[in-house]
Image (tube, rainbow, N blue to C red; front, side):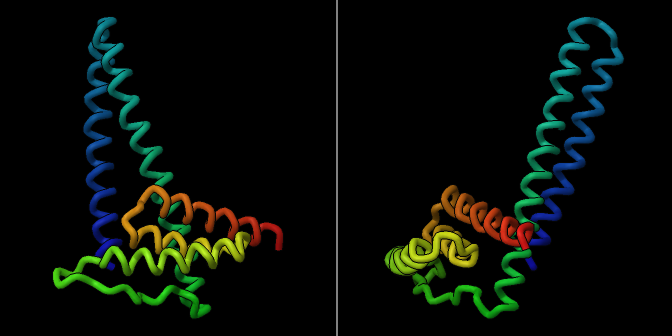
Length: 150
């Protein structure tokens, strides 16, 4: 729940920022000189890119949360079996052990979105965020492909 609140607050702050930057871009364009119009257009591009990025990221999070909810309903969410350091951080060797199992599961069932979801969690626990995101994207696309074909 804390992560959802943090994400929502961050997204809201970004939207306010985009509105402020966009209004400055419009003011520059309204000034009417060639230089200010050029700067105004350039400034307006930033909020457009930001809104697109925020939208795509929000879609990704919503789809991943739907998969997690479905997996939880099926009783298939990965159990937290990781050892932790006294400070609460995940023990690297423990994360590597779980990762090796999850990778073997995914290699055995490469078309199962559930195994890709669990692999994404293992990547995340091993602090490999780019691969975690790619694995989750794979899980989402496999899930959507199965749902569309059904």
